[in-house]
Length: 239
Length: 239
DNA sequence: CGTCCTATTGACAAATCTCAATGTCTGTGG
DNA sequence: CCACAGACATTGAGATTTGTCAATAGGACG
Image (cartoon, rainbow over all chains, first blue to last red; front, side, top):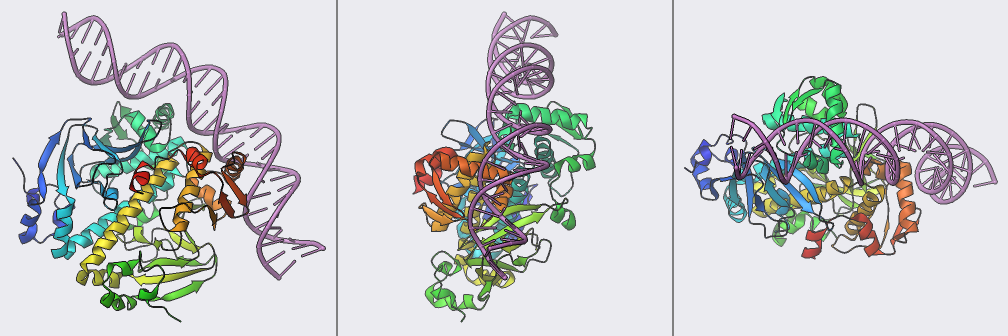
């Protein structure tokens, strides 16, 4: 049962937000019906021709690069509302491999047709440019975290970021699931997975969080932010 | 002596490349004449209202965030042809501080007017979206480097990236200047500056590079890439 | 030529990685 | 429903790398 973009729960932030009501139907022509994927399923593969962007409707994805030694190197995690594949547009080739972490539903957007649609819908370009700028900004935030702090600080920042992204707002969601393994988190943060585990233990000992398996509960948000040490000043200001 | 955009040496990759010849003059109206700045001069400050993008005509810039402890945290380096400020578009506020590293010449592009111009020049939006995608891609490359462990690997990746950017092509330029201090490199790579120094020494000992002060010469490109360990597979493929 | 700032090098402390052992969860098949 | 195997997570101990503090060396600039 395909769902029209105008009725989508993500419509207020996703592509439909760039369209006037009476024009949204144009969008349905280029978006494939939301499709269900089982977990650990490849969506696209590094090096193959770039054809479409994917939007996470539910579930979660990771992207990774396989280096010469065969290690997976995580480049990103994607939650509902996130758009996957943006960095591959300019090279016309997927720069990484995308894989579901859990059972997920994805919308597929043909990029060529989206670009075509932009010609007749200037607001769509505005929307895209804003989206890109946001992606760069959050990338920098995180980059900044990686380039500075200890394992605990990195993990704290990671959890805070995830907390916000889970809520799909500027609020922190105090309870959320980690869809990815310790290994994945470690790869993303540049830590051995043992170090990641120990960092979790420290955050629990400090009473910043509780955790039961993949379920995280933030007990003391302030303390967690303290650990994170990330300059989120511009974020604070704008919220 | 202001120079028209159509005569600019960067015209083939910069904004003018999005315009038909007879339309380029529209661009001159929104680009302030190239201006000379001395080194260590602030261009814009973290938190102030976002009004313009800057394009590096010559010289080099760094951007950084000052965290709660007062440390400078480098978020990026910008070389000729690079556009500074993209991550600040969506929040309408500069997310970091930009400062010249050396004497530099910069073009200032009023963003509001640029956005206006996009409405009547769809190719300009296409150009912008490609640019953003490229920025995300190089961001990911580097992010990936940071999540690698050793200091030598990080520095090697940094030098390779800089080498390519200096040439403003997909070739590696074997001789180039480092416009920034060891401290800046260290901050960018998440290393103490002493560690950065030692990493330089190791690269010299391994006969990957020669260096005389800020002047770098790549002696053995393959060996340097070996040290870098960065998967540049998609880069290799497309060149 | 001398001063200031930056870069390099050394020694020790602290953090992280690696290897190994143990514990825990998940899904499968009896 | 339970038992079990395989994957994942946690913890420990020693090796390695990096950070920190301090001293020295080298360039840039007046």
